[in-house]
Image (cartoon, rainbow over all chains, first blue to last red; front, top):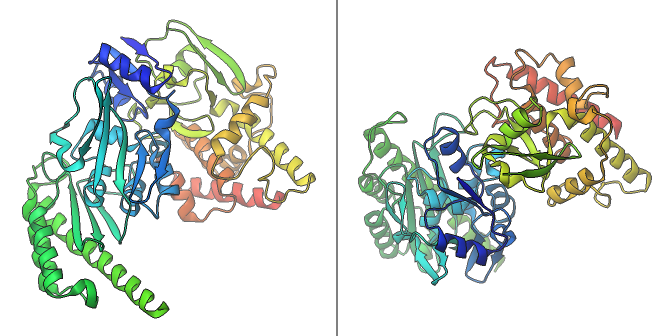
Length: 296
Length: 210
């Protein structure tokens, strides 16, 4: 094994072009487990820890450019207002020690269906900034996950950042596990309201071969909210609409039975989380409307 | 490969390090610092918790090469680390800074940078910082003893490092703060109640001093 230690992003891209099998390591919370357990013996291990700008973020008008290695603890601390869904999801990642090291770039690189960031990214809307010596491209998050632990990256590409749309409405994240810390999601659900476009987006984790959106559920809810004038009148979402939304979210799942839970349980739990997160976010949206109206 | 980094204020060098080796292995097997414990090797148990540039991490998940040029504090150096911190705070108070924010150690935000500065100023003194012997225990260590929070002792070093960092950041923690900060440290003797007692005791003693 060779340990590559690029001092700059350009050096990292050059090294990855020269050694496409090189395994990038940042927080190490996935890679080191595989090495410690002898599950993986990469020919080249490439430490991204010297590249300072990977741990930085920029808040823009419409989106946040989040460096690939920004630790979850920083997201929780500094980006709660801009990226509430991702901040909530970050808080459910493992333990403080892991959150101090791990970041979204690693979650995307590993592309496990159980990665905690994925439902939040899918719900908020995001693009992955991938780069190689050949150039930079932005991969829409919906097209990023291609299979179980597979993603759309080319062998010579590295993840530099992820551009996450700034929240313009309430967002929620919910995760099922046996305790509050150190849990791999049995299943997880993210939901974001986008009042500007009058749309709702979802993200489901650990209930299909890849993280997915429940698009049929989104379309149903978008239509139901529009039809009833809910975005304007701020009425409570009807129980029948919430139930139909929950059922469609459950139906979007394609889960398996495994040690953490059965397929049936996952489908059921995703439905429950969909209904709850819809209620939480919608109540928050209604509250914000009233506050605005009151102030005006 | 060769790896250089600072451990408990003293520059260290390790040769013939395998590229996939963890920081934990280097500390324990190459530097003779077995305080950090090796248990799960997958970041689940927190027994190997050390501070890397001030930040608590699982040393089993840090590749040795990633520690190059960085500052590591292990449980062996915790007493001295805590002593230096207390001196800095006393100095800050003497200079009229109530919050301590104007001194070398910020209480939040740039915590990593602050403790890096602090670590740099520390000098190697005898073998104390390596063995932890011959110097007064850190307040959190004494509190663990006084509260009877040590059973088999295997989880203790990781808990001490994590709890000490939490008290540095959050001087008056709630029970929820303590539980959250220690959520990545498992005690298989299930001695959590006494561990909670110990951290509460250390926090109370710390606030009495101020």
